[in-house]
Image (cartoon, rainbow, N blue to C red):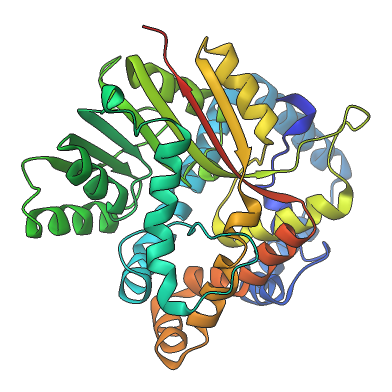
Length: 361
């Protein structure tokens, strides 16, 4: 991916000297005592020589143990993601139901709030159609839902195809709720959920006819490993469906996004616990590098345009507002950042992409 992908999940994103939104101003207020204590400690060290030596030692430590540092950062990221969804999943289910993803709409259509749950089901059907899963000959019998939320896709697909499905999530709350819903719907023998890392899936090679990732790729700190795992667990001849947020493709003359674009994405990353963003073209290259076939990609940004305004509208109802306030700081921070997603879509910076492919037989 190289220059087309940049890491936004860093301690710099919490630096109060950086341009910030109102939500990040609140973050700084909460962090101010810790920052102040760090300044006192730094000032107490009057020896410039000792500081220089410590700095050199730290740089050497980073360069000699970059793997450990990367794992440490990933653990922090994983905990943030799990905590966010532990907090917010109940609110989402109460207001929006059990599908924790965008809806699919006809471009420039006017929709009512009551239409959005149907649009989320339509998103699943459109993704299956795009990947030609509607062909009876490609009917899957075993499915993995990577980043399953509370299991909406897993249960829907298991019912639709009479298939077995396994879902993985970083959130213990989501895994428990997903299983409870499956059991209540009589799917306990078909569908199961567990806490697991998508970058190190607890499944053998070639197990699943359909590898499904609906809006989880944006949380993955290592896109190369993520795609590699999707390919690894896919059965020969199996289909991979990846629906995810991306940044725009770069033009041949560009080496990176503009500073203004990076700043906007950094604000979104702080709120939603997102690491590196990449483009649709980057994902296609990664799929190609894993020798996957029949790779197709399409920009569905226009088809999801009504979604974020609807989420904001639901959050501004009395029920939504009080639920967000009760949920916890991570959910509040995410709610404050929702207008930034609309801004990113309107500027053409954020792209809602579907990418599908097939593993060679």
